[in-house]
Length: 281
Ligand code: AMP
Image (cartoon, rainbow, N blue to C red):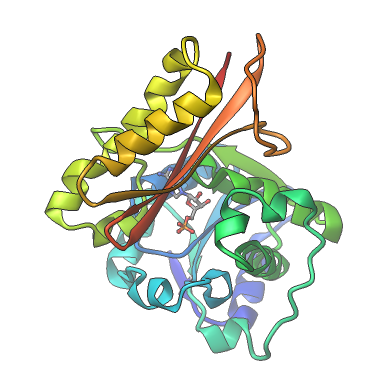
């Protein structure tokens, strides 16, 4: 596996490896890799001739300086994992390489930008759109793989591709989970043993909602979720929303055969975790 740090070396690598028929797959990450990230590489390997990853902790998408400072960084282990997974090249740029100048954040991302995560993380999705656009221009992949663990991010990237006329095909991939249902996340590494022991409650609570919603109205259900999370040691609910998976508009009443998305953000101590689940009523 090639390990490259400059934009020029990535362009040279891509040029050398691309012939008319080769399909290039791309998996952008912020490192501190886990099985969830590797599942994206594996999915890419099934349909692409070359799979490329990037590791870059993008300062533009952090609205909290402490979160950026404390974000786990494990570059040696990441390289080993990518190599084992059969990744062909990893791009690990410095911040100066990616952003020699302060970029303008001006993507018209529409209504979804300010919903759910957008309400609590101002500027976050502009930062995401900018870095992914920039990475797409450097790597010029045919397909790019993203986890639906960050579902709203997938919608934002699809919108970014639409407004930039990008030809990259966005491939959403399922969420990998730990034994107790907790969605795998780089931030899980920051949990203490006690916090980690309780964190399974997030997914376990979501998983009960499709059944509970048959017997409860939505406000009562939301209270039930809030109490369940907040009564677990170290856990504090930031939001729980039942929303339309396409528009992210809140669903206020259940109707038959409706596709619904459950979206949650929880502070586990100081570590902010998100998850989601989809079902049809
Ligand atoms: P990150 O390093 O957190 O920016 O994530 C890089 C990519 O991995 C994003 O597309 C994430 O949605 C995806 N990802 C993160 N966690 C998981 C997971 N548990 N299962 C599948 N994909 C994931």
